[in-house]
Structure formats: structure tokens, C-alpha cells
Image (cartoon, rainbow, N blue to C red):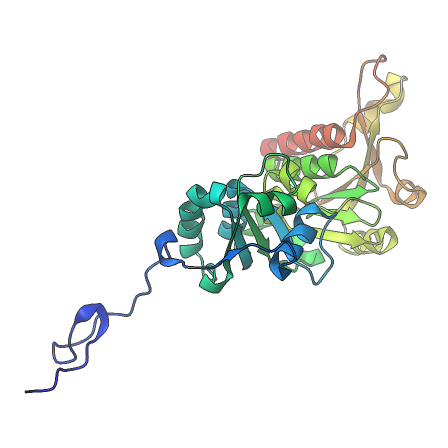
Length: 314
């Protein structure tokens, strides 16, 4: 009996003419077979717990992301997946995540799709009502030039950098980054003393913007001020308008169309003295006399909206 010819791609024998181009089909949920993690002391569950319940990753630690929408956002913006954790409650979201991963260069390694029980997933989750899917992503390295240039579509725009100095509430940090992306900022800097933009709470408040927009974390204020001056970026500080309207005429007409860095401080302590000393101008926000101050997220959003309005009219 004649020996059967070796089989090529798509079931074609080697004698049937040229082979079709090799193609690796996207990984589907049904293609994944993994043992269920049942021990609370499993090394991967410890890693997820630290990422999802902590205050932000160190420089060599992964970013923890929870929930299908944020995971898909992270995958689509090119972050490399270190691991994906799924419980019974999250099985329905897995196909959507894998489809998004199939459209990227890195995808999701089969060996890093991990399964666990709903009870154990809840023990590592950082939310009160977990959706059963979480992921660890390798950090993207951003530099000062990235913050000035912005992501790909914005690289023709003049730099508009939002600097948070001492904003300690992660919800405000996330809100500021979300507004920064919405109103055309090229990047964000979280100076030392500011809550980590990649902490779970800040990520959720940013609705994924902190994963897409160039972000620098933990930068010393004096170093940042020196770099901004060297790059000829004007330094603005945001604050409430004084009760004397006449004194605010110049401040209210700040020109934000040219390269600008807007510093936002905490609602209580305000901005550091070195920032106030280095500022080229103050952007005053007129308010009702009955309101003493705005929180950092609202103040930043107002200023960023004004910057976007001016730049569109340019």
C-alpha cells in the first residue's frame, strides 16, 4: 500500500500544489482548556490581589485592570497582557476579550488564561460587585517627549500638558485624566505626592483614558518645571478668581492656544510654592461668592474645556 503523503495546511496534501499562506486563527473561548485555581494561596491569585486592591504598581509590577470594558480598552490600545483571570460569572465576557486580543500583535497567551471560582475571584477583586474578569498588563514606558507630543492622532497639536501636584484622591486623578483626553490634552504628569493614575480606583474613574493617554508618574516638581522651561512650555496654575473682578481681567483671558502646562493642586493644600513662583500666569475660574472652592477634578475640567474652545477657534 502506498504511503500517505504528509498533510499540509488546511488539510491539503503536499502534492496538491502550492500551500496557502499560513494563518493562525484567533483564539476562541472553546480553544482554551485550563485547570481551575482553587487555592487562595495560588501565586497568580496573590499577584491579582496585590494589583487590584493596591494603590498602584511599582515600576516593575503589572497594571491590574478589572471588568470587560476596561480590559478590552487596554488590549486595543496595545498593552501587553501578562495574565487574564476568569471566573464562572465572567465566562460570558471572555469571547469579546479574545476577539479584541486577536486583532492586536501581542494577543493573549493561551497559557496565561486562568480560571478560578467566583468566591476566589471576589477575594482578589477591588470592586464590590465583580464581573468575573480581570487582567494584568505590562506597563508602557512613556517619556517627557511623549507627554508633549500626545498620542498618534494629536501629534500636530501644540503641547497641552496637565500636571497634578498633590492631588491625592484617586477619583479626582481619574476624572482629570478623562477630561484631559476628552478636551485634547497631549499628556498628563502625576507629580510626587499625587495618587497613582494606574491605581485601580483612578483607572476606573478615568474610564480607560489613563491607559491611552501618555502619563508620567512620580516626577519631582523641580525637575518637571526645569524641563517645561527648556521646552518653552508656558506654566499656568489654576485657581479661584479673586472677589475683585478688575484684578482678574488678564487672568481670565489667558491664551491657551500655544504650548501650555496647566498645574492642578489639591483642594485643601493647593499648589507647592515653587510652582506658584515659576508660573507664567494664573488661570482664574469665576465662581459664585457662596462657593469657596471647586474640587480638583471639576477645576481641571473647566480649564481644559476653555483650552479646547480656544484651540478650536484658532
